Length: 80
Image 1 (cartoon, one colour):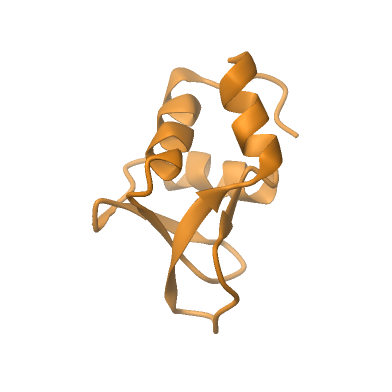
Image 2 (spheres, one colour; image 1 turned 90 degrees about the vertical axis):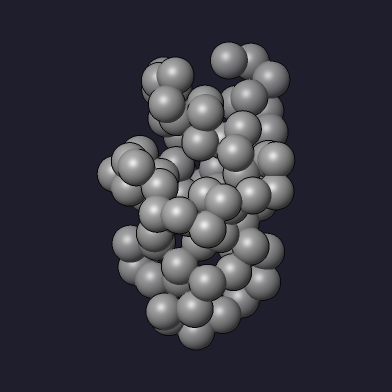
């Protein structure tokens, strides 16, 4: 988990929760919001590696899939 979420981290989680985000599948997942490349990929990757953001379906490397919050991601938004 992440010790403390920044304002930007919480904004990314809210965008994912809003249904407007996609992940580009890979070892270092890229995040797209409203079809555009997320401005802070290091934050997006940190959130994905922390298990707060995942793709909704399994896919091959290089494919875009809708992103969703995990239970832990929802809980982080509730306590932040």
